[in-house]
Length: 438
Image (cartoon, rainbow, N blue to C red; front, side, top):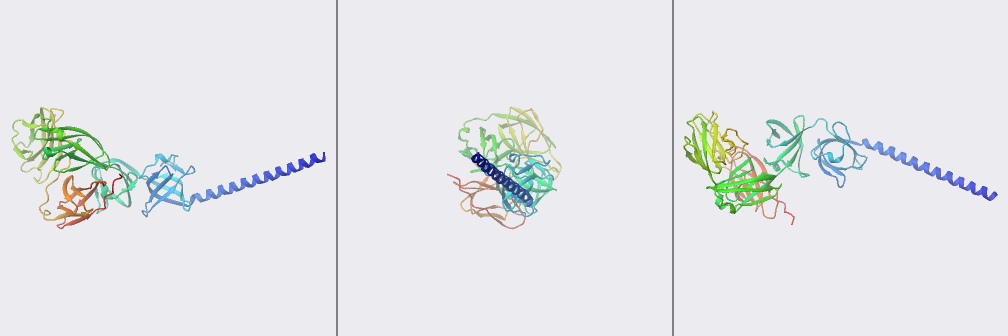
């Protein structure tokens, strides 16, 4: 009995010791949690999301005030909220988003990421122009300031203003009429023609928006996507379907299209004023009767006293069609470039989307040049037309232009430049091209 009581005593003592240790562990956990909560309010920042790395649970931010980039990790304890303070997951955040981020500075851990309530987002922007000198941007006819710490993002990487091409589709994040971030949601690639000797001097149409004369060795900058490409010259040609990928070159072999005979169609031009002079593909044309033209693309120019000179591209695609054109009063030196499509209805007076074309060089600037001195050895293209191998130069023409640099074994790059109208030479040096992975 005495032995039994002794065993009970030691058992009770061990039980008390265990409870005491458990109690101590709980207290330690509570103290750690309290310390953890206090550290949550360490730092608060207003930033742009530059890169989201879900695999490593990290987000890179750009500080709006300083332009400095930094990376914070996140975990299950990180609260992510939309502009209405509703909980969201990291997959609902996007590069370019403006956020208020609360974080633990020493440990570089985000505790709360809140989408900014004052930011407006403009999607699918393709009508834009950028004035780099003034740090302004026109979007759909309205002017916006560009932030000093502007973040420009393309495929999770930061790029520069010159990397934005007129062919790109953008997303803008704007606060108080100031653009804080630009994202290239849809970029551009390139189209090169192979075995195109017969079609030089003809026209190429990519989709409905791009019409260009075919020049030797040309390299077209085209928005990424799937297209039907029409190429014609001297009554021959045809269509091919292509897919253009971002920053990649797509080659189209058009040698087999030479044997495809293109039919002709008759176009009745209804032009106001009726004494306007019409030129088709550079030849003055009598339009008092229907004009017979080969299927394909043609350039027309209209001139009349007291009216602005009008340049248009038309696509002949049926046996008979009417095209109605009303010229605008003004100086005869102005040129409007639009695309008129004679396919479809027999009567056409709808003007389709604008297309770009090389305008004449201003006489006052023709004796000045633009020099490209780097990267050496790269092929140089101006607005898709081959110029030569860098170092190279071309006649100065003010306005917005696309400079493309290409070299075998390297990634092709395009830059949008705004050439001034000052009567002096200018020089550009671009970064070395990046070698393609083998």
